[in-house]
Amino acid sequence: MLRVCFFLFYPQSFFFFFKIQIRAECAPASTTPIHLSSSSSMVYSRLSTKSSKQLRQRQQQAAPPPDAPQFDLEDIDSHWPPVEDFSNETPTQREERLEREREAKRINDEIDAQIEIEKSERRKRQPDIRVILLGQAESGKSTILRNFQLKYAPAAFNAESEAWRTIIDLNLVRSVTFLLSLLEEGESSNGGSGSRSPRDTDVGSTAPSGSGTKLVPLQHLSDDLRRLRVSLSPLGRIEQSLARFISPDNPRQAGAGSGSLPTERAFEVSVRSGSRWKTLFRRGGGGNSTSGSSTHGHEEVQNARSVIEACREDIVALWNHPAVRASLTEQSVALEFQSGFFLDAVDRIAAPGYRPSPADILKARIQTVGVEEHPLKLEKDNKFGSKDEQVWSIIDVGGSRGSRAAWVPYFEDVNMLLFIAPVSAFNQTLTEDRSVNRLWDTFLLWKAVCKHHLLRKATFVVLLNKSDLLDAKIRAGVRFRQFVTSYKDRPNRTENILEYLKEKFSWIYKQEADNARSLHIHVTCATDSNSTSIVLNRIREVISMDSFHKANLL
Ligand SMILES: Nc1nc2c(ncn2[C@@H]2O[C@H](COP(=O)(O)OP(=O)(O)OP(=O)(O)O)[C@@H](O)[C@H]2O)c(=O)[nH]1
Ligand SMILES: [Mg+2]
Image 1 (spheres, rainbow, N blue to C red):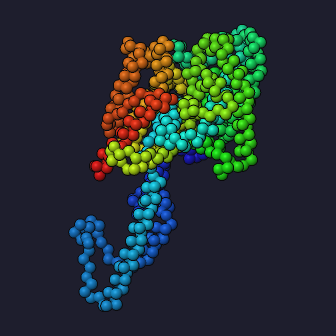
Image 2: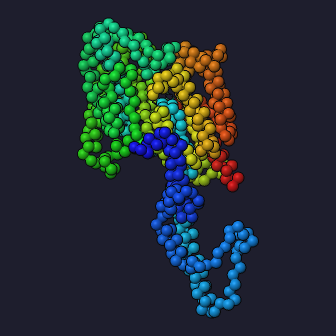
Image 3: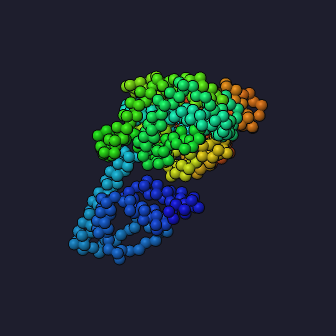
């Protein structure tokens, strides 16, 4: 606790603490520690492997006794190698000396061999390329990661489809319970209208999200809506049990769905530690998967599936009900533009035997909390003379403000930074701070990242993501300059806005980056794997070219 407070008040000390840890992890296990403060050299020495420690002890035993001649390192150039005089040696002394030298050489060779083994093992463990994905929450980082996996590790990507089906089920159920809660509120509000903050602004709305819109309650529920309310009510329980299964250590979301106003309550289910939740779905795969609680969890997931399948027609009826649609329109809530929207595909998704397509998996939403490194093997790319196979590590991070302190330790040795900017977010506010425009937050974040000294050597790439949603908003008549006043009277057209944003990102990079090189900017729609694949090709080319140049400089 004391340490947490210390880090909060002295963030640099937090960073320094991690930096030492990282250096220590990267330090060659058998090399002599370089000079650090005593505490940090302790970290180094503790990391030496047992085998090389033993070898070093044996070398010390074979070394000359402590009364060996002293020397001055300042004179190293003129006195090295030292000239030794063996003219007075007796034959026995000579034999002993030669034996000592042979033994020292043998141990030295053993140490060298050990170092080589450790080096090659470390090389095996360490990726050839490290790519970090940064950006605010919901910018599309994990979706870009999934695109990488789909393109370069399709078998593993497809093997996870059962896990993704549960996320999609949860995304779907959340949308349904949201619609049901509108009906509840309509009934209980008794003609009054409440003010509340929709989580996302309608594409057709010109009001900034979070400004508060007037509810138009559904006062008089028709018989068919009443029936739907009753028949779909078990989905509230299903939502909770799925959320509990996916993220059992998060009590807040396990209880999601109750209490708060419908549009304010979290749509999010988050997972601590990236993709580890997927292991919950590996049956018989060791760990907890065979434990009683896990079996119970699997039963709950199966049960949830049966309920969703049984509710299929009623979900379709609810989503297509004119009164529900009218209510959403009145409140400027465009569910279809929110993350994890699957209501328009219920017929397919709630059908027995449903397996998510890659497109479904790219659309699914689960919030990342923390940081996780994902290894990815890429096959040969001869264009720039690269090796037959490359191992990349893609680092995905949680983007909410509370998660950002955990990023810095992962900056070191990063080859490429992929900064994901959700350009459609210009009329939205942060979930964690309703007073902050999301695009503004993205630029602040970009500025901070550009000037971070640990990223000086990294190649910077910006992905202007969610371009499809930006286009939908602009086509629906939302005016960009109403939210970004510096845009002034430029045309309210998607291409012009994207050009403007590109200029701004480049300008900030040039101003802030210590070592500004060419900045690569691409427009993306991460839910479209075909167009994203072309961008990934370009990214790979840039990485190959960089590695090629670095190799030629060495
Ligand atoms: N329409 C559209 N949706 C996108 C696009 N990119 C991502 N999404 C969706 O946006 C949602 C959020 O994307 P994520 O990849 O989970 O966002 P993230 O940046 O990882 O968010 P955190 O984990 O909270 O930091 C998901 O439902 C994605 O399917 C895009 O280009 N267009
Ligand atoms: Mg994520």
